[in-house]
Length: 408
Ligand code: PMP
Image (cartoon, rainbow, N blue to C red; front, side):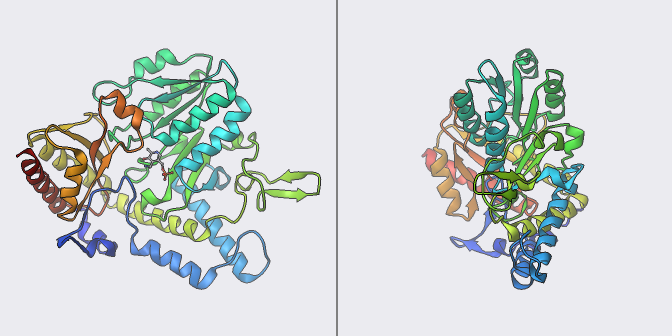
């Protein structure tokens, strides 16, 4: 293993120091939501204790301090994603809201009958249902890029689907079911050649490896705070400045206007144009602290460390009878799904919980993907920076026991 000091990292997560059903908690569900380190909790507590005020509104000291922290957090996100400008970062409630924002502003404004939106067969409902609705409203057509048996994107099929009709390619960076890391830079390059815009759903990607939106070349990139060790209720939409400038507002109210009369309103420039109402201020501050924490871990070798844990998990799973991996992508991050030959995933999930082990069972908000694989659900194991080898081994042992019990 690398010299990554997981013991020190675990010290930041007091939630992990508890027992569940008499066993030490083994949390292997970070793809659903990650836990929050003390530094994030402390940053939010400090904000409420010393700086709390509404932002962009008043001249008093607390208001200007709160505004400063809020905008510094926006800059932190811009730096994290390697965006050119702070103004390219829009606060949302999460990935879902970020995608809805693009679909309902750009989509409703630009799409018409004959246009095509390309998605992959491994999209989360957040990046599928959203576009389905916009396609219905505009007459545009959704087309689904198929997958190879390995759970990777069929890039040949993708290239063949691109045409002058393609207006948007909206694709997940890392699959929350298969763990596949998609070649998004190539996806974007080909989309651009066809004249289409691109949106990347980065919900599962940002926690595992650095992301550079300029290197990817995408027009939009979305992620959620709660999956990168930050709070719930806050997320990010990165949008290229030139594109954001052309988009109409989405929601209306305070904060997003420059001038209002009883008959009409003039709207702020991006990003405020897309941020109606009081935003999640303490959450932005918490997310900024979470990104500091994450970058520190990545600099200390968290990416390689988690890949090694993943390999241990994959090797262990392959040695258990009646367990098969769903997808075997060459590039994988953080997530493994399995199907069980002789047991139901929900039953196994419950037996694991009885030993303090938290994994996820179900369709993982990707019903069409599971349906296309002929599955109703999987057992999903996902990793965070705080997991260690002992936990992987405890999980494998408990899984073996559960399967033996249910097979009899
Ligand atoms: N896309 C992917 C790939 C996800 O894993 C998730 C969260 N499960 C989402 C989108 C939606 O994120 P949120 O619920 O935070 O909006």
